[in-house]
Structure formats: C-alpha cells, structure tokens
Image (tube, rainbow, N blue to C red; front, side, top):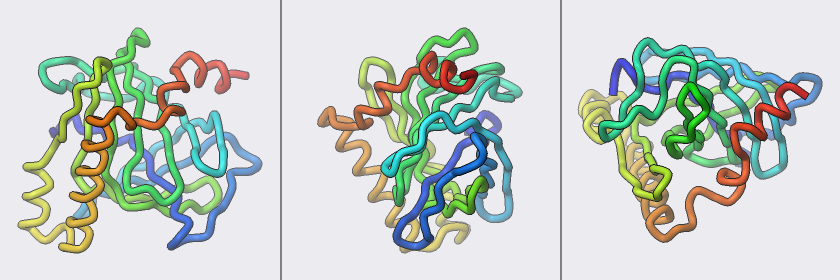
Length: 199
C-alpha cells in the first residue's frame, strides 16, 4: 500500500515478555515503529486514557503526502486524526480513522509484534498484515501481497509469520461474528479524545 501506508501507528504493551510500566508524569508517548528489514519511523501521540487493559492515544493532523484509499474510498488524508487503542500483550492495535473534517471512516488494525514500553517510549515491529472494517461492518484483510513478499525475502521468520496469520484470521473471524472491535473502541469517539487532550 506504499506510499500511503500508515507509518504513525503505535504498538502494544506485553506483560509476558516485558515488565509493565505505567505512563506517569507525562501525557505523551514516543513510538518507534520498525518495519523489516531496516526502516524505522518515530511518532508522537497524546495519551488520553490509561487503564490496565487499554491505553488510548490521539494522533492529530496526520502528515500524509497523499490520501490513503481503501476499496476506492478515502479513509485518511492530510490533516486527518486517528484515535489509537493499545491492549497489553496483543499482536495488533486498532485505529479509529477519520477524514480531515472529522468524519469517521472505519477501524484499522495493524498486525504487529507485542511492543515493549519503557516509560514514555514504545517499540514495535510491523508484520505487514492489516484488517479494515468499514462503518457498516464490512471487513477485509489488507496487504497480503506485501506479507508474502516479506516472507519470501526472509524479512519475517516463519514462527512470527504464522503468529501474524493467526492474529489476522482471529480478527477477521471475530469481526464477522460481531464481537470485534471491542466495545471501548466504539465508545471512544474522536470528539471525546480531543476533549480530554485539551483539558
């Protein structure tokens, strides 16, 4: 999906591999987002909610060169905002996408490695696969071609690739059964996130 891939995404905490560190003393996080073999981007987001089971962050005024288009529809554009949801130990995150005028366009899940968090700095790795859900509930798996190419070039090892496939399949199944995304993702609107961010 280059060049319109989402490079300001964020990762997840992992209670099993890394110690949990709460975000204290600051309302911002710096996200190191790696993509094999050697690409890394750093993004800054505002924390608007932190609970044991979820961290909600806000990315405002996304810097895109061109709109991001899925199935012929603009889902992000220069100036768009995204509300991101991070769940401890998960192999995906969820973004609530909007147009520049605030219109909701859908839910976007990145399949990623469970990230580690070191106070206000997060680290995660993109595993190429993404799941997209439209406002009417239609769900689609994205970027399978990039995923298979990464495997063929040995950018992702086979155990990690298998785990990524499992995660994407689970999300698709849960979406089709109407149990994904979880309620908190639907409950937290852009307006609510912005209200907390400026409070």
